[in-house]
Length: 74
Length: 347
Image 1: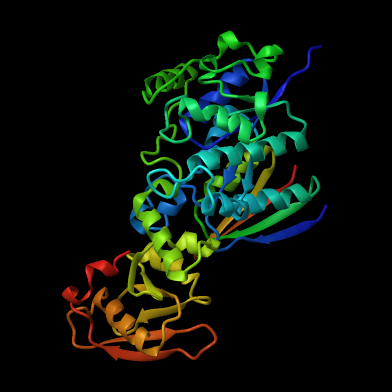
Image 2 (image 1 turned 90 degrees about the vertical axis):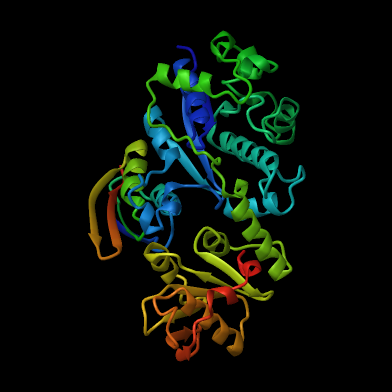
């Protein structure tokens, strides 16, 4: 199990979801991915993508204009 | 145990692709969705850049569709490959810069590659014969089949009964009797089927799902190509065409002026790569300069930006001019009068 990060700030949906999807596809079950975003659309889309594809959202934090979403690869 | 056949569904996020996939699921087919991102897709999020639209639901309709269907969705970035489709469409454009037929052929071709790589059996789309003036006319539906290379593994469940049998029907993977014969622009049959399946709150975009069908957007794209003497674009270009007020006072440069707080905030992300002008003495918009403006041009642009600031009726407005890799400097200008901003500068 290993921890990874992904910076998708400034990108508009669906690019943050595509980058998250592509990164998750490279990881192993149990790995975690912390995604840094600025498009508020990710608050719906990354959790929706995770639900559809069977991954888990560990946390979602909003700070100033930045959104940090932690995903566990399942 | 009989084999469960697998179909890749092109999911746009609209009602037709949702229904087409559902019709297949009802027949026991394993369906997974593919959604292609061209860079021109209309999503609620783009509108949501603007603060006044922030009450709108920020959902990706393709993801929403997949979730309603209970299927996986693979979102594929085709921004780079799509350039050739847009710049050199074999079948030309629709009413605006929309290369709908070439686009459909390209997406089905990509879907065919995808099913070969992922061991799927056939492709489904939500096409309805006669629904769209360019890409869904009766005479062009075989063109998509042939030019995409999909041949008889392209099934259109919503209008299959109006079309020759495909391999999934001939081989008995699906029951043709349970497929549909929708045609024309009347949406009532789709709406009735949606009700039957219990789908509510599905997307019904008035102007389609692509910015290229939008006249204003297309005008800005053509203007960009003319100004650069090149039919090419980068991702930043096509994103910036979606927002702001675009003014071209000289052929070689234009101003992109934020219209409200949400746009200014979004454009802030481009200030390291674009020359930009900000008001200092008064509240006002952020302006990005696209093109090689010289010092006099920037001074004139500052007068234009001042026109859109709170100081528009003052004698002097102070603005900062910021260029990549250069020291920022301030200028004090008299805002242009409204009558001095020529109508033909508006792109």
